[in-house]
Amino acid sequence: MKKIILLLSVAIVLFSCNKVGKDEFLITGTATGIENGKTIILETQDPTTGAITALDTVKVENGKFEIKGKITEPAFHTILLESVPGKAPYGKIPFILENGEITIAIDKDSIQKSKVSGTYSNDEYVKFNEDIKVVQKKLMDFQTQNMQAMNEAQQAKDTAIINKLMQGFSKLQQEVGEASKAKYTSYAETHPKSYISVLIVQGMVNDPSADAKKTETIYNSLDESLKKTKAGVAVKAKLTETNSPAVGASAAPVGDPN
Image (cartoon, rainbow, N blue to C red; front, top):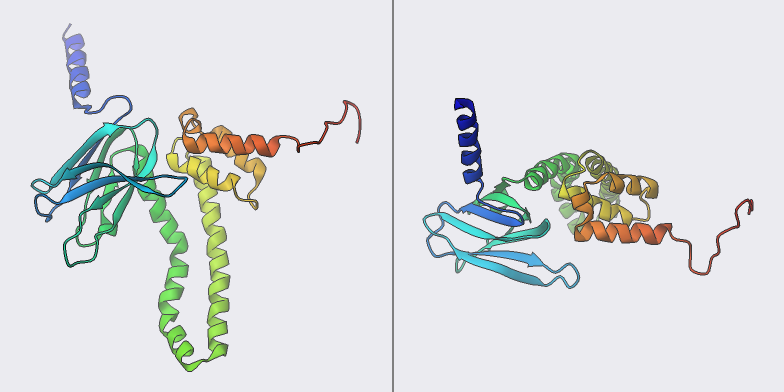
């Protein structure tokens, strides 16, 4: 009897700790050092028109803010912090809005260093970005190391040095591009439940250079919930279109070698 009571108590505690229900999200934010009354805007972008829409607006209170609502499927959104008059805008914080409790810690001094965590896809998004930065570091280092040399060559109109630097950059850019593409594909193959994976597959299905068979295989391995998202439905439509016979073509009779 004591064991049953203990188990029921644990279940009640776990249930009470869950602040969101099905298709709900809760963003708990910290905005340390930002004065009360500053506006936080939750935004989304129309995938067709590119228009930005404000979904919700809240105020910072004692260095904190909270946004709660409903979401039927994961999608990229941004958090915008009201800028200080006379200063450059803070910029936007990208994250994946999905069912669950999301934590956003705003870094007012460097908005790019703001941290998002709390749900599976957001945690994966952070890790994925870090991995991609490692892959692309060579390209960034090349630009940093040769920026002064390029500026000097352009001022001196030294075409020999300009061409040499451009060729080196182009070669490295191709290498990094191939490595990045391999990283994207590998991620989608090994993370069937991550929202990032269905976006990667959407990119692959629209890339003529991508392996069509591999693209379809990765899509088929995705979690069913991802296949039901807008991106997943678009991928399915594209695969169906690609696999369908060309308009006006007729199928060869059974047994016909031609």
